[in-house]
Length: 171
Image (cartoon, rainbow, N blue to C red; front, side, top):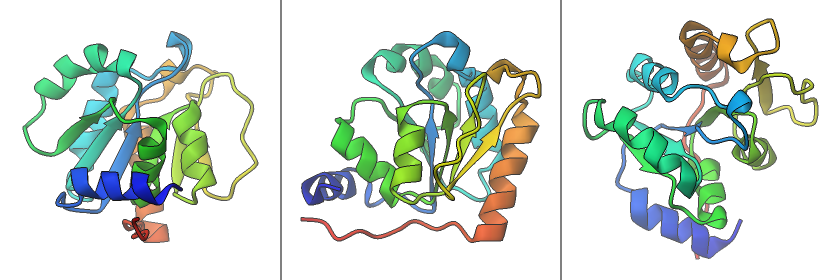
């Protein structure tokens, strides 16, 4: 990780209460994108564990997500779709854990050693990282994954693995 990116993320979000959960809400195609309303329901259901939840996607995801975030209680959920790639990676690395679509940020989470739960559609089971686990709806469609399944997966791993934010020395 670039120490300057870590410093930038700490400057932006360092005052936010932890542990942090990052939701990877973007994907390259609609069939690999879980609905924003379900991410919102997961965020609300996990409010007792995560005082801060980041919604990480690309710049093109922000217009789709903004109405959903505006409907949530203010202050907890943070739209983070404008971060450059190095800062997005730093945010993930500093967080306690990750839940998200089968996309680049999911792979980043696994590569920087953060517990990650992937919402998968028809992709093969990832077996390249001990940090990564998979959820699917049983029929190979991401849309079949329920909010309860996602909440249960995060809550179980959080409890069993003792997720916590990680400190990384900044520049």
